[in-house]
Amino acid sequence: MSDRVILTTSSHLEGYRVTEHIDIVSAECVFGMNVLKDMFSSFRDFFGGRNKSSQDALREARVACLNELRREAESMGANAVVAVDLDYSEISGGGKSMLFLVATGTAVKVAKA
Image 1 (cartoon, rainbow, N blue to C red):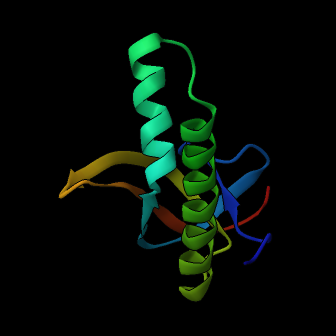
Image 2: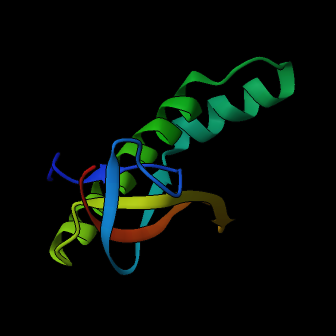
């Protein structure tokens, strides 16, 4: 994973200028929610309160997907991705639950202004 690729949800980066728009870039990640997390999540839904295991799974998914977005952008020759958007979905059925996360943005080359 490259730390050299800057990510931002903004359409611009303060102190940088976009020198080239490369292409739309995306990363798709699917994560299984294990049975224990699902069971404890059900209890938490019933009794109320925050669900730490689900929050941790969402955080883990976000970090992994953004790292994948960086790799994709770098493979295109970009050093930044602007207008990053994250979309979360849950896929469930057959007693299984999966978290689906898509990160998209515009891969660009930037230079210090």
